Length: 369
Image (spheres, rainbow, N blue to C red):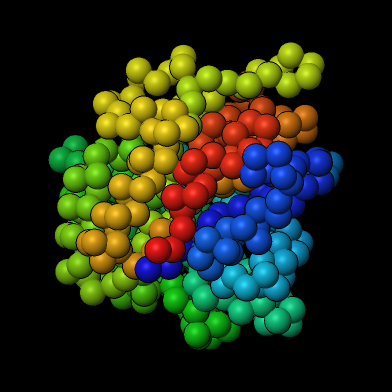
């Protein structure tokens, strides 16, 4: 089973002076993950994560330079590289799939051409730089489609979705470029809602119907939104019928519900925190504590191995809080239509290191046995 990490924000962390420790000893976390048997690095790519006056969107500002530099670093450390195309200038997920600014106003045919040309240009540069891509994600958490509105799936009164033909045209454009430029890479289609067997059955049945060529069914699993272990692994079992590998592209669990304060007194609103934890339709089987996070990860990995899951990636285990470390700048929020929210890092309580950069018990569970 593949063990991976997504540390797309790592260069931004280092630029702001982040340090990581085991006890009182400062460590290189990339090296230590490798010693734990972690061997794949997933890195997201945003087209142009800057405002028109060149202000960065933050959240790692994961542009092409960030991808190339981090991929070269990780490859040099013995990792295999997974490229995660978002086909957006900023975060793409089930609630937003905003087209890049440069692609605004294009027709579906023109958008397909843009996807193909952009994918081709990125993969050409990867080859020139000597970056070997083990896997490529064609879109990120595309449960509801991508490049909205043209590639958005439309939900009907009966719960089924339509507009797969348009979505698959876009996917096929990206896939074609990947197969031509990086034929050795395995291609991933990545969804969330990983407890929903009906959605996965419908989605991947339509991938077959419209001839989308891919190798891996990828899923996000965060139990607050995606249900119990039982629900998740039942869905992964269902997905066997499509004859593809099955991988967890994003996994996370909180080690605390308490926030943090920066030196200036600023505090975040955590995605999963004390103030909103009761709003999730989820009864924790494991406490959101350092010990609970470790127990969650230990049991999840045991089950994943037992049930034949092909890979697991922990999402942003190094994304510590700090001055200048934000999930979005005001410019980034404006681009995705989410202005007015706190901008501080809202995910730090799901790292494998605490707010001071000290390795948590779960860090030692995330290892190849």
